[in-house]
Structure formats: structure tokens, C-alpha cells
Length: 447
Image 1 (tube, rainbow, N blue to C red):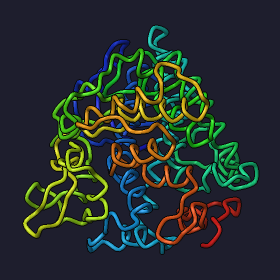
Image 2: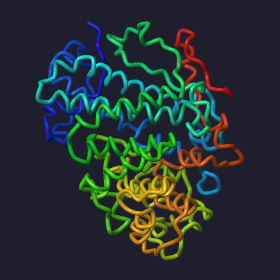
Image 3: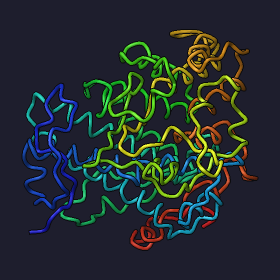
């Protein structure tokens, strides 16, 4: 019998109200008929999907690092010996870049497990069915969003109905057999975003749970706020961010440094990945930190051009530290076995501020009040409320958290001499996938 290799993190049931991985087991190869034909194994497969999504190639660090390298400007420098991140930093990416290929493949691997779960959702105990379905929809929408941001032109480039997006595959691959339903052409950017929104909107009322290590209504709202912001749907971005701020129970940490390097979720985390010696990845620490803290030899340097952005009294600037060579490093990703924030409350305040300002509204709070909440936590006072200052605050507050190139693209800025919609700022579809695609998968322009 053929095997389907998936990560099984927990054989324990993912029952309503459970938000912890109760038992860590190694990677296993499990007979597919058992994975998707019993309640317990479908729930274990769901946990397996979380493991794939939290892996290094996706939200365990590489996706965030790509954004920072593409948007580096003069603020950070890649000095490491690995060619693949260097290609991204230089915007000279090869179609066989193994880092990018792994991200693409792991993304579609997670999507396929979600598709299998959704196709067999009626096997799940009725009391838990909605929550399991909501989790699978959340993860599928989240992964499609992360991939479309990297492998397609930005929504802000226009031509969303004709620019190629992703292959939208909603039918599971069974026993590794690729059918006609899986050999589909790339959908448009517009249709890809529509699928992301559809998955997240469907997940939101049924997912349940609390903020933390698993998806919840508020994790869905937080990701939706990002999606809508990229789409220029400011009312949607505002309302989803407001839902998180007003109803999630999360609070801004009083000390900015307490948001990072934690061994448990902070008060501010909306969706966070635990990294332990037994499980989890933290490539942000691997590449941003130094050997003194168990990382590589300081592959990403923080330049004076970035440090100079901070006021002398800004607590966010104080988080950077000098290594023994007088090179600045990011204090956000200092230690390996810490919780890795994917989305946090500080971002929601800035999203609500921007969306309210653009719309001339004050849902939840005025833009000035939201800006002051973020700035006062950093030890700063009020500034004029305008789009430039809100944009600048995002640049400081969210530095090196994986939002840099997305903000550059939606604000239609240039970077390193490239226009926001340049071919060089879009990843190639991996050559392996083009060759295996049966002629239906087209390459991005410029490759």
C-alpha cells in the first residue's frame, strides 16, 4: 500500500477549547486510509499541517526573511555564504533557487493536507467538525496568501484580472496521484486573492479558539486585515483590525522588548509559533542572530541607515545590539528556542490607524489615538497624523518582522532601484514545477 508522509505532531484529539500540542512525536509515514478516515487521525493531520506551516521554509522564518531581503535598501545587508538568500537580496534570482523551491513545495504540501481534511470533514466528530474545518480553511487561506505575495505581482500593480496569480488547487491529491483537477493553469491575481478571502471569511465564524498557537477568530481577522490592506480594501482592513483590538483580549505589552524572545505567548500575540528543542523552526534567529546565541555567523547585518531612523529615546531602537565587531544585530530574534510572533496587536493598531485615516473615519479610535498608543509604548510623544507618519511608524514598529516588501509594494515605492512592480521583486515559479506541470504552468515574466 502506498504511503503518504505527513508530520504528526499530536495523536491527541484536537477537541473544542484545546490550544496546545499535547504530545510531540517524530515524523512518520502513515497509511493514507488511516490518516483521513478516522476522527483522531484527521485531527492529527491538522496538527501536521500546523507543523508544515511553522517549518523554516514557511512561517518558521524564511517567508519573513524574504520580505526583508527584497526590501533591504541600505538598511540591512546579507553577508552570509548561502547563495540562495543572496540571490534574493541582490534581486538576481535563479529559477532553481532551492530556498524558494522549498517554500513553494511546502506551501502546496500544506494546502494538499488541508484539501484532504476538508474532503473528509464528515468523518470528524460532529461536536468538533466546525472547528476542524475552520482551522483547515484558515491554514489554506493563510498559505495561499503568503505564496501569492511572493510569486505574483502585487495587487497594487493593477491588472489583477490578467496578471497571473497561483494555481488554485482545491481537490486533494490521493496516493500521490496527480489528476486533471490538480493540473490547472494559474489563476489571476484577482481570483487568487478571492480564494484567500473566501477561505478566511468561511473560517472566521466557525474556527473558535483563543489567540495563541492555533488559529482563532482573531487570527483570521488579523490575517484578513493584511489581505484587505494589500487589496486596498481599507474598510475591510479597518474592521478586521478593530475586531482584534476590541474583542480578542490581547493587550499591548507595556515594554516593547517583552514582545520578543519569549518562552510563552506574550499578551500581544495573536498568532504565535512555539519553538522548542523538540519542535519548531526559527530561521529568523538562524540568520539574524550570531554564533554567541547559537545561530550562524551573523548572515544579516543591520546598517546604520536603519538605526538612524530611530529617535534616541525610542525603545524600539534600543532593542538592537552590537556584536563583537561593532555590527548591529536585531534583538528581536536573538535566541532560538523562543516563541515566534506571526501577527501581533501592535500591527493591528497601525492598520486601523491607516485605514481610518484613508477613509476619514474613527472606528474604534481616531488615527491619532492609535498612533499615540504605539508611540507612547516606545517612549515617544504624538506626531502629526498623516499617511507619511503612519507609514513611517509601521517601518519602525514592524522592522524585520516580514512586512517590509509588502508595504513597499502597496505604497508603490521603489527599492534598490527597482519599481514596486518590477519583475525582479517577484519570485520565479520553481523550474522543477514548470517541468512537471504538464505544460499548464507558466513562468513569471523576466525568468
